[in-house]
Each structure stands twice: as structure tokens, then as C-alpha cells.
Image 1 (cartoon, rainbow, N blue to C red):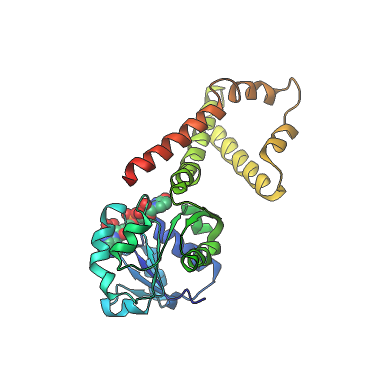
Image 2 (tube, rainbow, N blue to C red):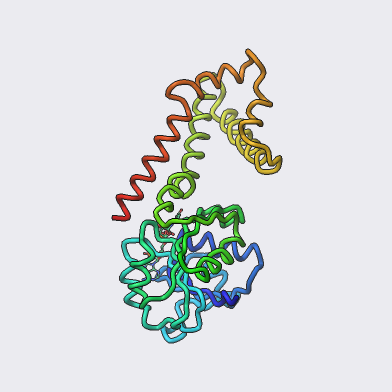
Length: 266
Ligand SMILES: NC(=O)c1ccc[n+]([C@@H]2O[C@H](COP(=O)([O-])OP(=O)(O)OC[C@H]3O[C@@H](n4cnc5c(N)ncnc54)[C@H](OP(=O)(O)O)[C@@H]3O)[C@@H](O)[C@H]2O)c1
């Protein structure tokens, strides 16, 4: 399957994270990238120096086999109008634009095949997650090929499940950061200096996440392993896992993000 060249429409936070991740994976040459963005970031310029084509004349866009739509959802139609006519007939669109439906993208890009992806910016360090939906098998395979290079890939059977994937994945790095912030504040409330609390909270959470990743064990098992009966951890978990604790809070948080995604998608 020929994925390359990839045309990136938009290389901001998300597009830039992908470029960074692909570059680290050394899976393809910078010269396989074509980037279109009115404000080129450092990472775009870096791959430009290595051979990526930056804002080339529109006629050159016909070379792209895969077109990554990574502009803000508000301007995707304008982008489609600008460049749609210059793409190859068999180019496949892979969109990360939150809430924009495949059928609309396909219609705006002259009926071309489309995959939708909800990624995370940890793609930049090869630890992203991508939820993928495409009704067309080739579009699905294309999205898989480019996102598997920068992290874990999950295929969804229905397009509407992308809303829930946004709630549990796309928006979720912020939940983790909020948790670490709150843990740091908790340490200060218990008497630690802000610096000590910051170091302890961050290193402990990062270590626990790495152990979860490397051990392959379920989080519930890991939790039990570090919780002695009547011990300190159990005292904290009575608060965290009690009524109004993490389970109902996160269920409500995921539902709130999922519902907002539905609203934004129109
Ligand atoms: N950031 C995330 O964590 C995340 C996660 C999942 C999905 N997404 C999706 O990724 C997409 C991009 O989000 P982002 O956070 O990366 O936004 P962003 O940082 O604003 O990046 C979008 C880039 O597209 C550029 N652009 C504007 N008009 C363009 C055009 N006509 N042709 C090509 N490029 C153009 C923008 O330039 P200007 O700054 O000059 O406008 C900007 O550099 C969104 O649709 C979002 O839903 C983002």
C-alpha cells in the first residue's frame, strides 16, 4: 500500500505532534511530506530543511497519496475549497478535525474516500492513541498505517463512537494533568513545600503509569498490590472510591465530554 507522499493541511499543535512522532519513528523520509500551513512552526521548518515541501504551488499537491486534514474544524470547508480541485482522484483523506463527519468531508473533497481519527498529542513522543473510523477498508488501512507509527490504534465500528472516544481519550490527557495538579495541591495542604510536593506527585504518577504500561497487569490488580488492609492507601481510597468519588466523577466527566462533542459536531 502506498501511503506516501502525505500532504498535511495544517501543521499546528496536532499536525506538528504527528510530524515530530513520524520523524522520531524514522518510518519515512522528510521528502515524503508536503506541508501546507500559513504559519510554519519550528518542526515544520526543521523537516523542510530535511527535504519536506513547504507550501509548494497548488499544482504539486496532486502528488499526495494521503491527505491529512489537521486544520481547525471552523475552517475545514474553506480549506477543501482552496485545494480540493488540485488533489489526485485517488487521494485518501485522513481527518483529525474533531466533530466533522466523513460524509461531509467526502462531499467537500469531490467524493474522495475518508478516514476519521481522534488522536492525542503524545504522538509526538511515539506514545499517542488514535481512535479510527472509516467505512472504506482502504481508508481505514491508510489511517492505521500512519498512526500506528506513533502509538496505539483502536478501530471503531461506528462513526458516532468517535464522540465517546473523544471523552475517554482525545480529551483525557487533560484529566490526568488535572489529577496531578490536584495531588500536588493535596501535598501542600498536608504540609509539604510546593517544590517537594511537585516532585513527589509528578514522579510518582509517571512511575505508576510506566509500571501499568510495562507490567501488563490490570490497574485494579496493581491497586490491590499496593493497598494493605487498614493501611494509609486504604484510608485514601475510601475517599477516592467512595460515594461521589472517582468512578462517578469520571463517568460524568466522560459523558460531559462525549455530549459536548455531539453538540459541536452538530
Ligand atoms: N490539539 C489537540 O490536542 C487535538 C487533538 C485531537 C484532534 N485535534 C484536531 O486537530 C485539528 C487541528 O487542531 P490544532 O490544535 O493542531 O490547531 P492549531 O494548532 O490551530 O493548528 C491548525 C493549523 O492549521 C493552520 N491553517 C489555517 N488555515 C489553513 C489553511 N487554509 N491551510 C492549511 N493550514 C491552515 C493554522 O494556521 P494559523 O494558526 O495561522 O491559523 C494552524 O497552524 C483540529 O481540527 C482539532 O479538532 C487536535
